[in-house]
Length: 128
Picture 1 (cartoon, rainbow, N blue to C red):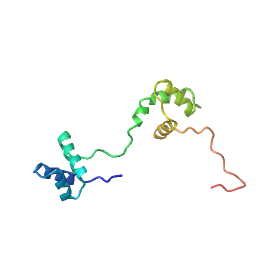
Picture 2: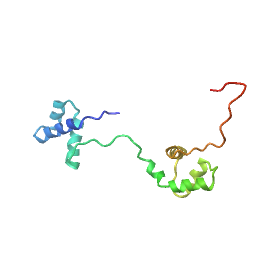
Picture 3: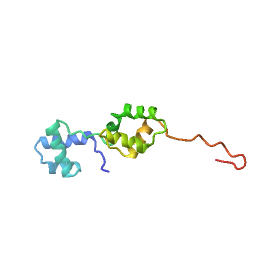
Picture 4: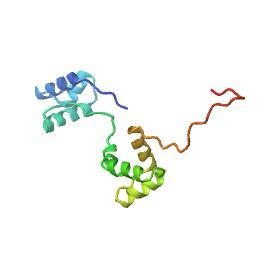
């Protein structure tokens, strides 16, 4: 994964280009790639800042969170509903999702789908 270069460096490279230096010359002077200098100049022209975009994070959970009330209602209606059944219900509503997506939804909401109670400890063999 590429490393994030400082905002100060980005601004100095763009300021050098604005002062009359070419992007390639500014890149050599500051020790960055020519492609980065060109990209930062284009960002400045489009958005008035060479700031980096936010990296990482979850960008897809909003799609299933929009159906949170429906999912939680389905769980209340049928307490032993399976993930496959929930997947089919959502597909019927026009939102095809994977099992992993549903699992992460339950994990975010701290909902467990365990069907049996915890096993009592053994009296004959120590359990860890």
